[in-house]
Every structure is written in C-alpha cells, then in structure tokens.
Image (cartoon, rainbow, N blue to C red; front, side, top):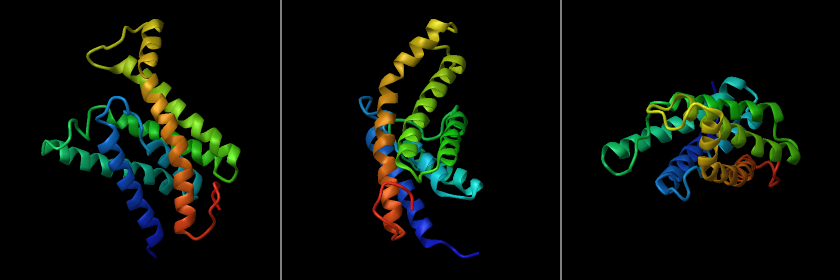
Length: 189
C-alpha cells in the first residue's frame, strides 16, 4: 500500500488546527463553539471517495486533538477534560456532518454553501436536544418549553460554529487544492 504523503500532511494539519482552536477558543465562553471540526467533517465527506476513510478523517482529527487536550488537562495546563461522558454522541453527530458533505459533494459553490449551513445547524439542534433529553443532572425541564430554553441557551455556540464552518470550509478547500497543486478555487478540483 502506497502512503499518500500529501494526505498525511493534510491530516496532521487538520489535527493541529483542531487542537489549536480548542486551546484558544474553547476556554473563552465568548468564543466557545468556534471550531473547525464540522468543516473538517464536511470537507472529508466532499473530498474522500472511499466512505470509510471519509468518516475516519474527522473522527481521527477530533480524537487526537481530544487526547492532546486530555493530556494538558491532566497536567493542569487546560481548564477542562478532552475526554468526557457524552463524547460518543458528539462523534456520532460529527459523522452526520461527514454524510452531508458526502451527499452534497464540493464541486459547486452553492452546494458548499448549503452544506456549510446545514451541517452546523443540524449539529446544533441535535446536540442541544440531546443535552435537553439526557443531561444529568437535568438542566432543562423535559417539556417543549424546556427544549426551546435549551436551544436558546445554545444560540451563541451555534453562531460561533456557523461562522467557523463558513471560514474553515473554504480555507480547507483552498489549502487542499494548494497542497495538491490543483487550483486555487473554492471548489474541490
């Protein structure tokens, strides 16, 4: 099996960007949610033809950055854990973003824009609905108004995620195209 050094370099770059984003933005409430991870998942779905590899790239990027954050937390160099109880849920929702990228592909600008809106929106709705339904201790009453209250509380994080996705998707596409000497357009060549 031939090792694709460009893909390996790009994967290392994704892990680095994910980790640095967590280090800089996650501890600051005013920036919490600003992360490239949904963009990475979308990008992987758009770019990688082999579905198993497309789903593996964002999971590997997130997991490795979570391990690094966990190590920093254990040495008291970061304020919260990298590995946490409901992590599998976030990983599952991330796979949904990869699926959206895989379905919409990245060959047309309108599809890239649609995916960049749909993925963080679904992630926001489903992750907040999960907090509402499963958080222990119960943070919001299990009523429709409790669900709405939970969704409203998450709007700042959603806004940051949406902005990050609209920034990181084109950045990832341009970087990928540059590394592969394809083009400097905002669609995958």
